[in-house]
Length: 331
Image 1 (cartoon, rainbow, N blue to C red):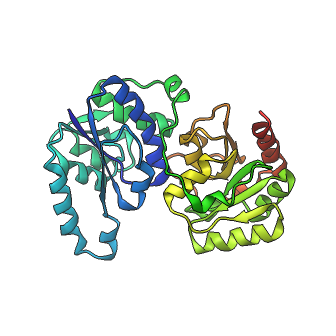
Image 2 (image 1 turned 180 degrees about the vertical axis):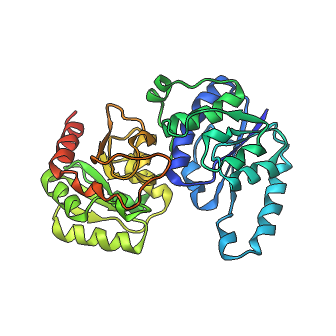
Image 3 (image 1 turned 120 degrees about the vertical axis):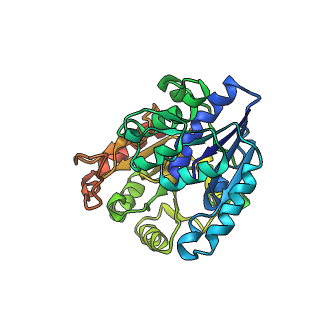
C-alpha cells in the first residue's frame, strides 16, 4: 500500500505530525510512506527511516511569482504517478487540500468542524473528527492514523522513540563543551509577542553558569543574540547553520530553553530535555513529559482567535525558569 502524507509546513507542525510514523510503520511495516513538504522544511524529515521518500514542493514561491503555479502543478502531477492508494492531508488548509487532490483520488483529512479552513474538508473522501482545540499532537496522530485503521494513544506518544535524525556536523562541535552542561536558547519566533525578553534570557544564562549557545534564523534574531552574548559571559552565538546542524547541536545538548516555535519542538522530537515558554499560544500544542516542561504566562488563550497583542510572556519570572532548568539539568 502506498500512502502520501501532505504536511507542508511549518517546522513545529511537521515535527508534531512525525511522531505518528513510528506507530504506523509498526502496525504495517510494508507500508510505503511518502511525505510532501515545502522544500524549505525537507531537512527536518531527512534521515527518518519510516519515510520512504521526501517529495518537496515550493508553493510559497507562487506568492512572489505567479508563473510558478504551473510548474508546481506539473510537479504534483508527476508525484501522482506513484499511484497512491491513500493521500492524507494532515494540514487542513485549502492549499494542502488542493495538493492532496492533485495527488490521488482516495483522500483523507479533517472534518469541516475540526479545522480552521472548513472548505478544505470537501476534498476528502474520509473525514476525521477531533476538536479544533484538542492537543495539537493528538490531532496530528489521529488524522494520520485513523484513515489507516490504527489507533495511537497518548501513552504511546509519551513513550515514543526519538524520531528526528541528523548527520554529524563538524561546524557545531567546537561550540560544545565537556566541562559544562550545553544549553541551547531559541530566542525567536514568528510573532514578537511570543518572544521571551532578551534581558531575561541573559539573566537565565547568568544564573545557570553553563555553556549557553544561541540558535538564530534571521538578522533580527542574530542582533538579539549578540546583545544577550554581550550581557553574559556564559553565552556564545552559533553561526548560521542549516537544519541538519540545528538538529545535531540540539541532539548533543543537555537542555533547550525556548519560545513556542519549531526549533524548540525539535528537542521533544529528539528526546532532549526542554522548557517551552508560552505567552499568547496554548500549552496544549505540546506534550509535557518528565523531561519536556512548559511554563505559561497568566493570560487566557482562545484557540480559535489567538491574540498577537498578548505580550504576557514578558511577565514570566526568570527564577521560575531557572528552577525548572536546574531540576532538569540535575535529574
